[in-house]
Length: 209
Image 1 (spheres, helix red, strand yellow):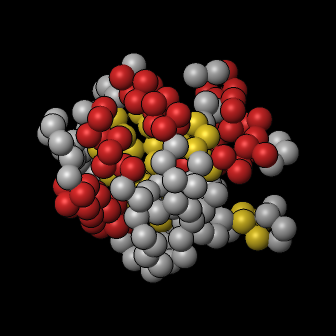
Image 2 (cartoon, rainbow, N blue to C red):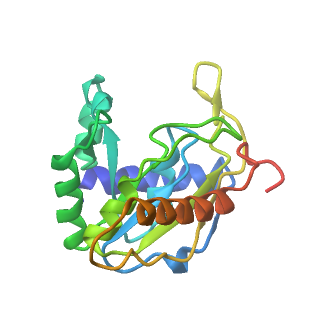
């Protein structure tokens, strides 16, 4: 990873510790090699804060292609080695790049619900997570995050002293090699999301966690 990445993580770590009273659980579950990180997604800050608490490991996220067209944000995503992915059908180029990086020992991060969700909202889940885990034959690391919605008020400049909680769960073995049926994809995807939602719990605003 670039110096920009590591400097950003140091800044975010300080913010989590001094402003948002972060609580991190289950870091012992983070595998040493390639893996597929799967998380819920409630705020723009989720991927950054998850990366910040994974000391010694970097995460390459799959991000919507449209985000790369936004001024300032696009170059930042590129510096952070985010993989652009189209949500209009299967994006085989993005999948191949994710597989290549996991084979090299990187962790790839993905939000299977395809975007941010409001507290209590459940979106249809994309099955790409099952396909990626099956093809890469890497463990799936479920992550639940709460307390990142909202974090700032008054035009995004004044921090709200929420407690940010990030929980890593035990890894889930990928589907065995061989043909992956539709039923296999559905079952594996639902098993992962059950783990993620259990880790996130219902208190998305971080109160009473």
